[in-house]
Amino acid sequence: MKKDITLRKAIPRDAAQIVDLYQSVYQGDYSDPMMSETARLRAALGRDDYYWIVASIDDRIVGSVVYQHTLTGLAKVFGAVIENDCRGQNLTERMMEFGYAQLRAIAHVEVVYATTRTVSSAPQKLTANLGYRKLGIFPNVHKTSGYETHCLTALFTKSALDSRFTDFTLHPRLRPLFEIVRRECGLPAIPDDWIPHTSAENFSRARSALELELIHAPRLTKRRFDEGKNTLVAQDHHTFFPFQEPNLLISSADQDVEVFCYFSETDKHCVLIGIHDLRNAGFADIVEKASVILQDLGVRYIEFIIRADESEKIESAMQAGFIPCAYFPAMHLIGAQRYDFVIFSRSYEILNFRNIRLEGINREYLNQYLQLWKKNSLEPEPACAA
Image (cartoon, rainbow, N blue to C red):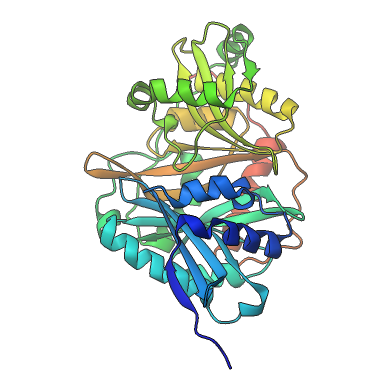
C-alpha cells in the first residue's frame, strides 16, 4: 500500500536525517558543504532567513528543498533532493510550491531565483512549469561527478517587475543578452550607452602599481567585511552579492584595496562578494590581479555581479577578461526600486558542452555566451584612447 507523503517546514532535529538523505543520493559529491555537516545544517534550520521544506513518510524524510530569503523580498530556492524510491511523484515541484506560498505570506517575497542542472532537461522543465523565467547560463559553474553547466531562472511577481529602475542606458555588448531576457520576461526596451575607453597606456600603468596578497583567514575576513559593510554598500554597488558570506580576503599591504571572496574547497568555485578600493586603483586592475591570485590557489571558476546601469564597471569587467553570462532584472531592492544586475563569470576549465541538455532559449544563451567568449578570448580588442 502506497503511503501518504507529508510536506512541512523542517526543524533543527531533522538535520541528521537531511544530511543522510543528501549523502545517500549524491554519494558525497554535493557541492554545498552545509549538506554534509550536521551541526552547520542544524544551525541553518534555526535561522530566520532559511525556510527549509521536507517531504516525509511517517517519520522518514524522503525529500528536501531549501529557500533562503532577504529582507528586501529576494529569495533563492536550492538544494532539491529526492530519495530514489520516491521519484516520479512531482515531489520537488510540490515542495517548491508549498515553500513559495508560505514565503509570500510571511516574508513578502517578490523575486525567487533558482539554478537548474543541465545533465538532463527535467529541472529546466520543472522550473518552467512553475512560471520561472530563463535568464542565462553558468558554464562549468560546479563540479560534482563532472563539470556542470547550470541555468539561471527566476520567478517574479508583477509588482517586482513594475518597480524596476529603467532610467539608464545599456552597455552595447550586453544588447544581445538583454534582448533574450527582454523577450522572455516581457521587459521594455533600454537604449544603448556609449562607453569611453581607458587608454591602454594608462591601464598598463595602473596595473603595474598595484600589489595584492592572499589572506586565508575566514573569521578575520568576515569581521573586516561586516565592519565596512554599510560604507561599502554606499560607495560601491559591487559589494552586493546575495546569500554569500566571505571566507577569503585578498588585500594590499596597507588595506586600501580589499577583495572579499567566498571560496568553495569542495569544487573550487569562487564568488567575488565585495571590493573595497580606497586607493581608487580601478575595478579592472583589481579584478584582474585578484583573479591571478585565485587561479594560483586552484580556483577553477570565478563569478561576480554588477548593476546593469554601471556601464563603466561593466566595461572594466570585460577588459579583465570576464564574460556576461546572465541578466537578472529586478534583482535587488534599493529604496523603492528594484535594480537589474549582470552576472559575469570566468572558467579556467576547457569548455565542453557535448553532454548538456538545454531547453528552449537556454540554447540561445549558450550560443550568445560562446560568441562573447570567442570575442574576448580569441579576438580581444585593446583598450583605446577616447
